[in-house]
Length: 349
Image (cartoon, rainbow, N blue to C red):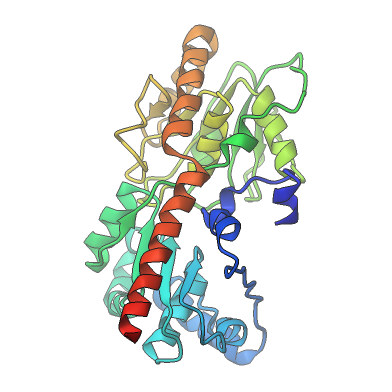
């Protein structure tokens, strides 16, 4: 929080909770540290085998087990939310649980789907049942949860800190233009990116292990969001290549770059989070999945037509400011918490 107050880091990854902290004196952040020991490892192995999901039950019980007076609990980590829900099933907790889920059904879509499906669906449904507000960050994710688990969820658009990402830091334009790709989640499609040939260098910021890229690709590092912002600012185009999953992968990278007025090339997957407000050729450039040729053509066209690139960038910035801000997400969270508090008080009357 100190880095956010000093504007060294954005509010993005608090998922709107910064608005709660600003407006409610009774709100706090609880850090759940990982547990060690044979029992913790055994529990995690069981859930990894059953659901391809970590399950930090002992950590959650240690750090949250005795917070009996909590009215509402908010989390955005599946491996924390599911144990919290389990504690609610056991009657240990009675708070209203709001969980922003990311990629909860990816396992049912992947190569392990046939083996996991029979044993995992029932368990997942049971664990999700005590969650009063299951939130997802895209229309595709909501459809996937309904399809595979028969569970209803609420779609809320993820928002970024537009004040942070729209502010230029005085970095001067470098003489050599470059493309930029950012992202470390497993749903990035770096195979397609690394197979393409572009007319200018491509910088890649990722923690994933990649096959040795050709000379036209350069691995870069960032120590903080200020350095990432400078990379966005000096780039010619942002490329976000994705695998076709329902999770809205690439969301933060795309929206951060768009908030800076950058033209973003994004794979059109079933996880595209808002088809109404993200329009190809207007505020974003969508490409078909796993097509090296289409990616090369998109980059070549946009580099040659700077007026199109700049027009899309301006529209992208406006779109983010209208529909994808962290303040908007915070307002939704405050409303849900207020409703939970009202419902809890009604039960006591």
